[in-house]
Every structure is written in C-alpha cells, then in structure tokens.
Length: 124
Image (cartoon, rainbow, N blue to C red):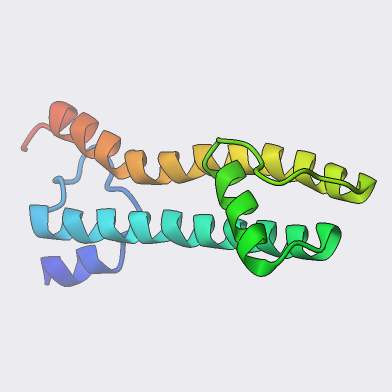
C-alpha cells in the first residue's frame, strides 16, 4: 500500500513530516527527472537544428553540429551569413544557456532534496 502511494507522487517531493522515500523509489524518481532533463535537451537541440537548417540553409548534419556546440556552451562552428541567421543564433545561444541551467536543476533537485530531507527528518 505504501509503495503504491509513493509511486503516484514520484515527481512530487515528500514534506518534512513524511518519511524519506525508500532507495528503490528514490532511484525511480531520479530516473524520471533525468529523463525529463534529457527530453528538454533533445527538444532544445531539435529547435536549434530546425533553426539553422531553415535560416542558414545548413545541411542537417551541419545544423546538428552547430546546435549541439551552442547547446553545449562551445559556440558555433560554421560562419553565419544572414541577418536572420545571426538573430536566431543569438537567441538560441541565450535560450541554450537557460536550458542548460534548467536541465542541471532538474537532475540536482531530487538529490539535494533527499540530502536535506534526511538531515532534517525526525522519525516520530
């Protein structure tokens, strides 16, 4: 019964007066948050690929390379020639910085919560 109750709330953290999740359920929660972060990065990569392909007429492989390099924080590889391409590249770079922060936050949040929860939880 308790496992079933926890499974419905694997994205919602337990409150201070609730016991910490058992390790196996915590691993499941962490896996879901990692999956959410991965899907976010894949969607952001797709936006970059589409933008470079449409605005700069790069091949799909060059679009992938540029989008992944910007998303990874390295910077563009190919030279941008059009004004709309430059606007897209600038906006995509800003967007990528935010995506990176959110993805890291998604992965760290359950770990950080578990550490704090175990530290403050008093078994009553």
